[in-house]
Amino acid sequence: MSEKIKYQLEIEVKSSTKVLYTMISTPSGLSEWFANDVNIKDDVFTFIWDRSSEDAKLLSKRKGEAIKFQWMEDFEEDEKTYFEIAIKVDELTNDVAIVITDFAEEDEIEEAQLLWKNQINDLKKVIGS
Image 1 (cartoon, helix red, strand yellow):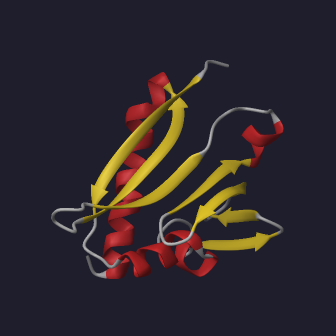
Image 2: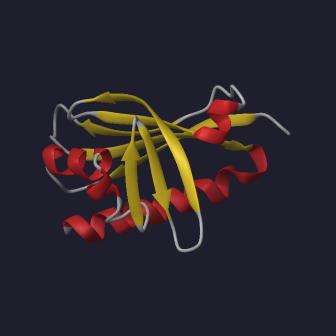
């Protein structure tokens, strides 16, 4: 297996940070845009899509700012990967953006970024941004 490469995406979102944080950090918020359903048990989030599900361990949560997960498969294999969804506010303009940090294999980065862009577009629709 080739090594995964870290990448970042920043997408402007017209929303309050409070609303955004709820959408990225709670099972009910995440189930509105990230997955069809989300369950949590002991810091493990189960993301459920049409015919599949993936477990992710909650690594950290900064109230009002960011949430960081690691897919359980990577956690069990002691990979140094994670995905983080952070909220960034521009100090001068007060513009709000979502910053995604994730890892993918080199030949899959473009596809992974497109998937995140589609997910964030779904988030924008849900919050009316």
